[in-house]
Image (tube, rainbow, N blue to C red; front, side):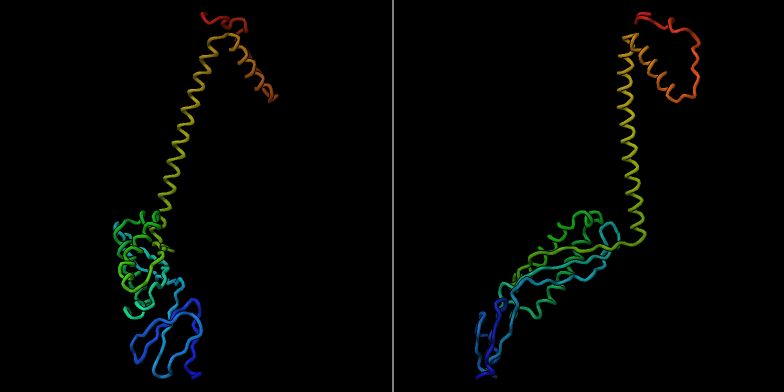
Length: 231
């Protein structure tokens, strides 16, 4: 009698078999089975994590890379997970690896690098088609790491550097254009007033005199400067 005692934890379910035939699913708690005649197989119904080992993938633009990921799933129907598939963990792993190679092999490298979330959703949609029949819910699929060849890394670094240089030159050209426009406006305002010209001259002389090591010579007296705009 004591050999038939079983304790099932809250996060598990137990399938009871009698002479190898499925009878029912036992819920958590203190349970008893008939020794020798009956057996149970426990199933964990918590969220389970499986790593997708690194896969060698050739992208659509013929770039070789190694991609790995992770799958999160949960057993919705313990009966199907045990009776419909042998070793569901191994089956999900193989499905995920095949789906990863299939999805990533149909897109370019830039898409994989910039749209990991979208790639994970596409892999998830492929895997869950088969796992629904097994009573398993695929919660999420994430791409963890993407390994590129060293020559490709150098090329991408050179491309990024060239792009930053291009942007810097564009910004500098825009700054020169704006500065030239402001100088033109200032010149027009100064031309409209002889007094403004003199004030500008005095300011320039003040800046030069601040160095205290320059001698300023005027080739003509200040009185010959134009006193009105017409002159």
